[in-house]
Length: 342
Image 1 (tube, helix red, strand yellow):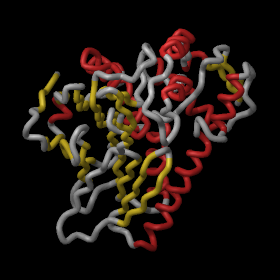
Image 2: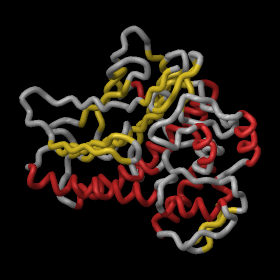
Image 3: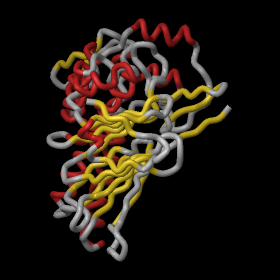
């Protein structure tokens, strides 16, 4: 029996002889975060990065599903069959937006399945390698908690389905990326890279070239590919190597298929590249349903979620990419060819 918690590792490639970016790291949202600022003095960079990390901490306390927070208080009210106390406007807006994305994904992106996540033990930073009671899994699946069960009465949240338990773990990191980019620009920082456990957004560039980042190989140390990330672009990665345990030689990851209540097992990793409005949120949200869709549904789900640049690695390690994504990648794994799909 083996328990492994692996974080997606950013590969940041700096040119030889260049002054390295100013960096700070922290641990928030249950993962490692890193903010890199290029071309600014520490005197200017430090307070800007401090503001970003302080906002990350604020969001962590606002949106944590399991510790005291505004979201946890909403969950407690739902479980008790009561309307929530007034919630911050920010939280209401995020829940409404997450509900819209859930509908678009045919429910494969489903922040309402927090009870399933807890049943599997993935609500904690540390978890045991054990299987839940299948009967309890089936019970929660039949209860069918959905974001559509939420109703908003002004600043209060109501759900007629007490099985709903909200967990924005697949949304909050992307939202935080967007806020980070805006905060840095407001502080006069125009060239930076923000990495929250593999969800990455670029602000400006690295000197006279775009930022260059690596996509973690799901089964080996190091990167399987690199790409240049341009101003305003974001990537999001969902993988079965980030939070998982193994029993009897089988891997069980934290990405739960709401249709079955069991971890999705058709993919090793998915990386999406997005740009434009709300790139951070979209990079976080869209990778999940594409991963859960598996080999049979990933291309259809990418289209449905409005993502054209996708790298999909199936459970056997076979890599496929959309043509537009393949054109952005420098493929490093010479032992495994990259298939291009239309």
